[in-house]
Image 1 (cartoon, one colour):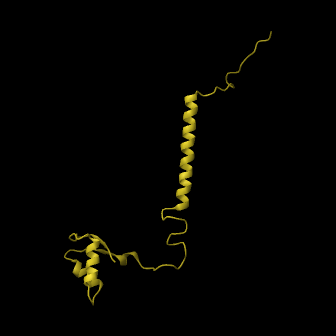
Image 2: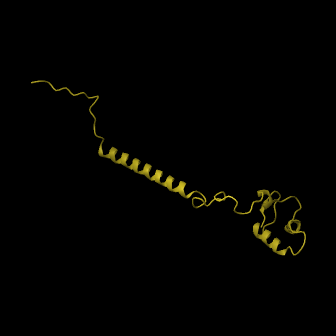
Image 3: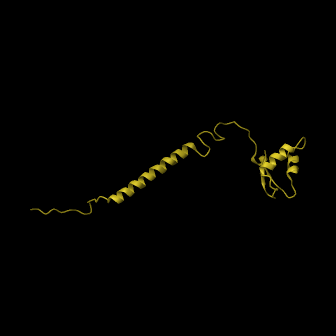
Length: 116
């Protein structure tokens, strides 16, 4: 009778059921992450593809961002800021809007107000 030799370097062992289950879990989690990334990429941070400000050229008002932010300087008040923004007419609605912006708190030097 001839002796049967087994080359142990080539023989593959099946992983234990616990290892196989763990590998399956890792593969499933990886597939879920890829799917979640694909959905997130399609929807984007703005809520949908093509909804950003650059989606359609020429739409929307164009103005510098600095025109919409006021940095409070020492000694400034809401009434003074409103008067500088609106030199004539009734400034009470503007003062009310600015007051709502700061949530009726006193102004702080260096605070940035988003102008209405």
